[in-house]
Amino acid sequence: MKWRGREGSSNVDDRRGRGVRGGAGLGIGGLIIVALFTLLTGGDLGDVIGNISGMSGPAIEQRYEPTQQEEELAQFSKVVFKDTEDVWNGLFEQMGEEYVEPGMVLYTGSVNSGCGYASAQIGPFYCPADSKVYIDLSFYKDLNNKFGASGDFAFAYVIAHEVGHHVQNLYGISSQVQSLRQKLSQTEYNKYSVAMELQADYLAGVFAAHQRDKGYLDVGDIEEAMNAASQIGDDNIQRQTQGYVVPDSFTHGTSAQRREWFERGYNAGDLSDWDTFKALGL
Image 1 (cartoon, rainbow, N blue to C red):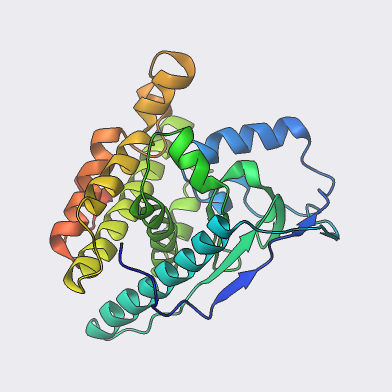
Image 2: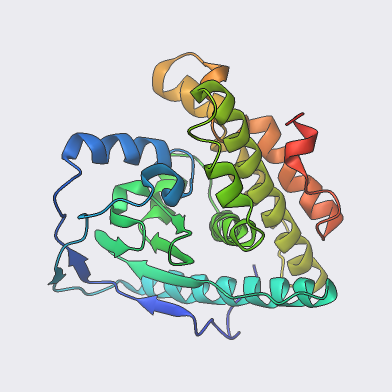
């Protein structure tokens, strides 16, 4: 992606080097469960841990010296985030609506969010309680090494997907789906979770379409994003981690579905085809 020399977002809170102590309420077992769910799926932490109280801890000042590569990745992330702001401000204006910009927090190790305490093991997440995207930049290495999803636009896809959850939050979709949690069986609720995640993939595709139209994409960028979407499909992850798949347990969609909905958003460039719930018969 062509990003060097372009403006970064002013809505970024750089907390790198300021870790936090974990509060009471979530033991290491709980952290592992949440980490496995979210790290492997790029999920919405607010949907995973909800409004957990008593989770925050005091900040810990750490000696932190970022590498040149990490500094570049931080600047890249800020530029991508600014690009999402430009895209969604423009689209909301076209629809006669106002886009309320989210924030982004860069952190290392652990962080206090509006959704509770989070470890870097959890991976990137969007917290609807404070309308912020949280990213530990070490996930870039995980994306490459653990998921086989290399390239800068693979990381841009991850950021755009999380911003997609913010768009859903603005439209009240997140709260509507969350309200079904106590009304449906886990298997049935999982179907709505899949629809939510595929819709965020669609919105990431919409973002990519506007990056294309502005001339920001390099050759191979879309393939990087679609490969990332495919690598974090539920079926692919389950095969890698347990050797078999359990479709009823899917929460984010198959590799094929995630690629499909990213591509649909990319082809549409707007919200005209984004109703994943209807498409899945919900």
